[in-house]
Length: 282
Image (tube, rainbow, N blue to C red; front, side, top):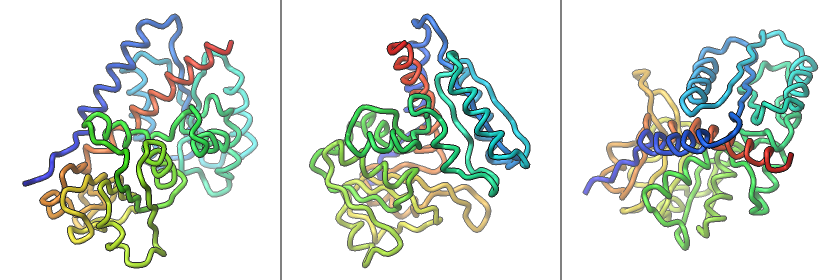
């Protein structure tokens, strides 16, 4: 029997409706500031989508478009200014940055309580310790999808392919916090298919089109595809061989329309959480 398709668009819309309802009852509007440096076309599309998302749920939003040659000190000064503005509850610097700017220095400059990407070492440390904090958007979106479809994590074998700081590592930690038994695989893992075939929940975040084939998946597994790639015809696709794997998985995310729509919705939820936390402490 073919897998149930996990519809990220439906779940994302549900998350946004809940955010919109909360905002309508607040005395203030949550505010998100987005900084983009340079003219990368994909980055500008992402930023426009974030601004549109803010408008949809009733947030204030500001976009700061800086030229490619912007000095690192100038960017840090803008972050310092936004850190101090009371009506700005979330700050996001769109990645990637030009090569002359130190990405780590920039992400660490945003105060943790406004770090809605959850890249700051303080927020990463809180995730590791299992403390309440802002969560990285894509991993949080994965957990929201599992929750929406009533897919249990507790006691199940979870395998994450990929160990990036943005997706792989935090996804593993969130699955662990949900009482999953987690294995993280990467390019140096011996006999990868033998490991992935043990997974009740398999998450792939490697960025290689068609990397996960049917022989790597246990029948009945839940397959979460985080990949955003282009196939040989230039068509958007994920890491997973969708036609073959959907015949043996119990649930599967498509690309596009699976994890992707969740990322901005989780960013909006982080901004709402940051606003409520800041209001509470002031």
